[in-house]
Amino acid sequence: MHMTLQFPVIVLQDQDGMFTAKVPTLRGCHTQAKTLPTLFKRMREVIALCADVEKTKNHSLSSQKFVGLQHIEVEL
Image (tube, rainbow, N blue to C red):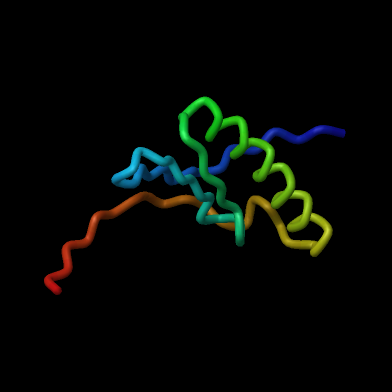
């Protein structure tokens, strides 16, 4: 039986143009790529792997709900 879930993905781009992405609701779920299409392909693969690990650990994949993203300013 297949299940379709949605996950929030945070995408950043560094000064060299490299993209990184992570899923804050799945521990250790992140990847990087030079292009957005490649990043999203890799992200789907890593989400499937991380979600499978979470299922085998008997963690509920729907127990966390993404609330939002907030930019917080900090003076250094």
